[in-house]
Length: 472
Length: 109
Image (cartoon, rainbow over all chains, first blue to last red; front, side, top):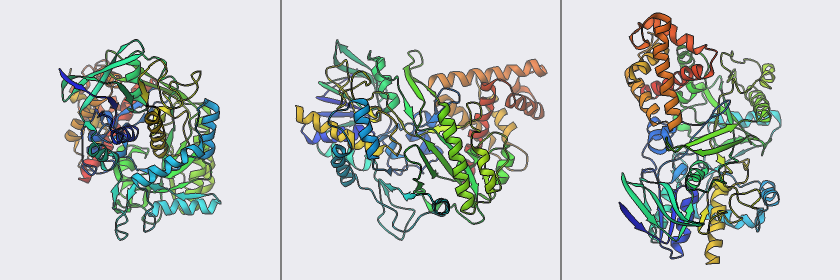
């Protein structure tokens, strides 16, 4: 058995784990960050490709929360976690949401003002930027549609570096493997990829060691302090598997539903890059945006037989995928499955979410027709495409548990921070029921933040780890 | 029991309309790999459904799905695509959506 000893073990190398590892290493702690997945170059595979699904996503990207309907989701499983493959959108958290978290969940020394310096530090340290030379045509269409409807829209910054304005589709992803993790290693931290932790051994409230596999060999990692940053599914899986069964009871996520719109002009070419415009009018409860739209992805959201889908795709450069994302009111659970070794994730989509997504589809379709779309493909099985703006309202109220095809990118809240009556960890991530275990990832977010959470996760992780260091 | 011939038959029946050169064998192989990479419960459920689908064909036409001809296979797929049971429909829908995604991804290369 491989034996490793360290002062602090961080499980997970996504944004929360990377921020935690770096700050601890800089403070001179003997820190080890372990990651279940492998270490790939940030550009090792094309975005959203089959290869990227296999390399960087858990279970090849085929994970789902069971329920009616099931909600498919993705989890990063590589060094750097989801930051290696997501769009890297940076949203400043909505101040009212952050302040409400503090009040509703009893989070001390927390709020929009308290988080602001940490957000600024994250932006400064990792770097966010806007495209230097305009948007893709699909983004332009969404913006034009919003303008026609009198709705607010915005260009979303990304954790990205655009070095050359003459290459709008290019640039460098500011992922964890390109930013915080190399800095952590330079500061003396250790990074172990292909290391999966299955269970924590305990003596009462005190965690002693992590048991798992490293490079296919059984391993035991002894530590004084454990920080679990494995994401909103794997963090509660590990903790529950180790006897802390008060976590994993309140999963929240942002369900999304997608549609495909066809325009008279070309809106979709590979060089146009990731769409960065979102309609902000209905935030935080609802976001309307544009997705990556290569032909295989368009095909996923077109109804009809495969040959009908193929015929539709002969015109793929005039088509793009758009989405409605809502702040889910439903709740889910994460449980362990001892015999199968995986997490069992269940989610009950609330009736209010179906209603909100239906309303969002109607709004989005109206905006797309106003922007010149000639056809909007309904996401309902067997439905005919809409061809007139007046038909957009027909999408309102049509979604239900039997016909909705839902997905989610952002999962949270499985180890909420705050008051012990409502949370799994204290205001700075210390796990209730343990003396030396902390959580520092998206699990801590009390509810869906209503915007892309990566900025909030990084800022909260920074806030927490700096407090731990102050308390030493 | 290997699921590869069943997945191959479903991919062929769903995607191969005789008009476009669909990489059926490659697509089926990738789908089998994807199924094997699924989380435990999903993998178990999908394997059970595929085996049940294979043997369901015996009840309908006297031979397992994997041994039926293309037309009979298409009829079995259509029966499950419109079945009253959600898991049966989901199984066909998974192969339709994921198979189309994989086939188009392969063609794009």
